[in-house]
Structures are given as structure tokens and as C-alpha cells.
Length: 349
Length: 264
Image 1 (cartoon, chains in turn yellow, brown):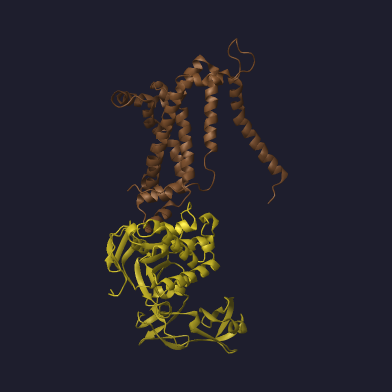
Image 2 (spheres, rainbow over the protein chains, first blue to last red; image 1 turned 90 degrees about the vertical axis):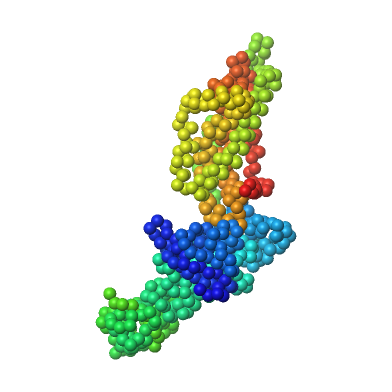
């Protein structure tokens, strides 16, 4: 446990009947950091976030925020700002009244003028200053979530908690809003815990991403490190795409696709294993005497994903810049090689 | 999108039939109340209407019934609504038993209820108060099936859990959540439930008559025994009064300030 951590979650445990939602989760978050918790449904990420908000009573564990133990503090005393997955604006209040609500509850600290100034500032920050007098039913989903973000930030929260706030929005709005969340978070320096099941979302805005499984944190690291250097097979397979390619491991290396590459820490150390190879780690070269055939190509914009059938019948997926992939085309005979990047290897079978 | 002539015609036909259904009895009441009821009357007369003011028991009975209705309204606002919200929010396992309990008065005939509560009201009359206003207690039980259904439908239509959690994280106490957030959100359900309750309280006859309390309906029945025209005139006047009340219900999306109190 780091002494410089602003938020410390220590050994959190929560059971729902026989289901372990949290099973000894520990996590440190530095001040001003944005940490994303990523994982499949039921992995415990939302339970952890709700526990920090004070909305979920734990079976066991300790939560410390800014040096103060908040484990048994009521949710309304914790000073956490939260944005929910479901639209949660108060329907009988305008956007401005929603933003001012938390400040009104702190009326002894916030005068009417200050409140109005603060709500104007935050509505400006989320780009909705012209919608201050609109009711929630007059706002789109994206606008509602922006107001919810402004409302959560208005109270200058100790920690901003985002519980899949973008999942109900369409793809374009989701991308725009996640960039805005990051901009605002960096501008205000608010310590943020972001829960999502969308890995693209997590990897694109977080300082660090924690991958959860069965109530435990499998790995927490910077997005690039998590993607390039997974510690476990689950992380390797959950984050991004992988090609499972069998090979023999010895002395920290594995022999696959006619080459030898280093294995990542946490991989098996010897014997038959399955290398989890990223599509962009596979190099594809056009060659009439090649030992593989491209049987389909999926256009993804800047890149193209090629499905390739190797001579031994194994199928792999490679990702290339679109111009290169288009030059090859489906049906092309190619040579497949592996870039010199370490791979994670799990035990075969 | 412009509606076709057939659709518009169909809609107006429905409106016409419903209006006819509602207005014909009112017209019939008005017709009856203006019919001559003594040899002195020649043709149509408004004597039954002018006699309303001279009924000695009427004004006190109306006042008592309105006070009773106001007490029932207060019980709805400060007891039944918060309890229904609390059950939906914090005790979901109790929803079915609570619903069953609220529906019981519908299944028990009024006469059985009277027999059950008569000893209690005898004791209340002797030891506390013999005013008909004490009927507010039994009325608030009778209105439960209608009020609860209306509230339950309103609560089910809104994600009150998320609203409550959002307010809590912003610093609201549970009383602020209930009175400041959930109640204004389900305002329509509360208003609907309250109007059904008021209609029931103002129209209730069996219990008050058997318990020998002079409420509005009991007095109307008494007047009807001596002069049917006046009784119908009073009934029609009371109906018009209720319609007037309904017309002055706020129709704007939001009117006045939000009920936001902290009783904690």
C-alpha cells in the first residue's frame, strides 16, 4: 500500500449470497489520477465503486480517502461526486437546479450568488450554458450525462465516481463525451474512478487501468503496459484481440511461426504452451512462394484486419495499415512472420 | 403528421360519447332539481337551489367532511406516500405483503369494517372526541387500495433507486430524498391518488351513517327524505364544486417551488 495514495481500498470483500462480488480487492489511487476499472459483467467493478461511494455496505475491508477512514461513513457525508449509468437527473428540476442541488445542501457554506456562479461555471465547462433552464426531458442523453457530470463536480468532490456513464449513449456521443470527461478531469485535477466494461473507453482516457475478475484485481497498469505486457492470460485475452498459437517454451522464449520470441513474466517457463499473440505483432509479406493464404479482410478505417490460413491449417488474425492490407487483398499468398515483441504464454490444454 | 379525416372523426365520436355519458346524468340531476315540487310552483323553479342555504345541518356537515378530507390528505402526504416510497426503496421484500395489506379494505365489505371498528369508535367517542372528523382514521384505511395503486404505478415508472442514490451522494438525508426528490417526481401519482381519496371521503355514506356521524353524504340523505329536489340540487352543487377543484389543479409542468423539507 503506497503512503502517497489519496484513495486506498484495502482488502475489500463483499458477498451476495454465494456470489463473491469482491474478494480481497486492494487498490491505491494517487491524487488527481484517473483510474479505470475494467472487467466482464459480474466481476465486482461496480460493487467496488458503490462501496467507495458509500452506497454498498462491505463484509470486510477498509477505505481511506485523503488520510481519513471512510469505511463506515454515510454516503451523504463522504463528499463523492457520482455519475450513474442510468440517467439520474432530478426530473422536476432544471439543469441549473440539478447542478445547484448539492450546493444547496451545503447552504451554510454556499451563498445564493456563489451557487449560481458555480453552476454557471460548471455548465459552461460541460458546454451547456445555453441549456441552464431546460428540464431533463428537454435534453438528449448526452446532454443529460453532461449535466450529471456538472452536478457531480459542483460539490468539488473528493473523488469523482463514474459508473459506466457512457454506456447508454450512441457511439459518436460516447467518444466525444469520454474525451470531454478526460479534458475536464485534467483541468480540475479531480481524482477519478471510472468503471466500464468497454476496454477502448478505459484504455483511451485512464492514467491506469485495472482489470478485474471474480472480485479481484488481476492487473493494474498504464494502458500501454496493460496491453503490451499483460501479467495473466485473462488480461491478455480480455484486453484486445489475441491469436492463440501453440509452441514450445524454454529458457524464457517460445518458438512459433518459424521464429523465436521472448515470453512475458507470468508465462509458463517450459513445455508446451499457447502464445497469445496480438494481431499487430504479426507481419504479413506478399510472397508467391508463401506458406499462408489471406482468406478475408475486414476494413476498420485506418487499419485492416486480415484473417490468414497457415499451411498447417491454423488460422490467425493480423492487423495492418489499410493501404498495405488492400494491396494484398483476399486470396493472396503471403509469408507470415512474428515481430520481435514479447508474448504471454499460457499452459496448453 | 396530419391526421386523416377518419381518425379525427373517430376521435371526436369517442369524445362525444364519453361527454354524453358524463353530462347526461348531470343534466338529469339539474332537470330534476328544477322541477316543481309543491302546488305553489308554476313550471320550472330554482326554489330547491335557494333552499340549500336554509338547510341548518348542511354547512357544518360540508365543513366537517372537508376537514376530514384535509386530514386524510395530510395522512396520505406524510404517512402513506413516505411509507410507500420507503418500502419501494429500502424494503423491496415487503412490497408484496404491503400491497396485499393495502388491498384488504377493498376485499372486506364496508358493513364488516363497521362492525369491526364500531367498538373502537364507541371508545373514541367516549374518551377522546365524538366529532365526525375522527372518521379520518378509518377513511385513511379505506382509501389505501386506491392511493397505493396510484402511488405504486408512479413509483414503478421512475428509477427512484438511482435518483435516491444520486441525491444521497450529493449530501441529501433520507428525508430530503423522500420529500425533496421522490415526492416531486411522482407528483402526478400523488395528486391522482389524493383526488380519488377525496372523492371517496366526500362520498362515503355507509360507515358514517351506521356509526351515526353527520357527514356530508348522511345530511344529503336526510334532506332527500324530506325534499328530494333539494337533495339532488345539493348533490349537483357538490359535484360542480369538485369539478371546479379539478379544473384549478396546476396543469403546468411545474408550478411553484419544490417541496423540499428536511424533517430529520
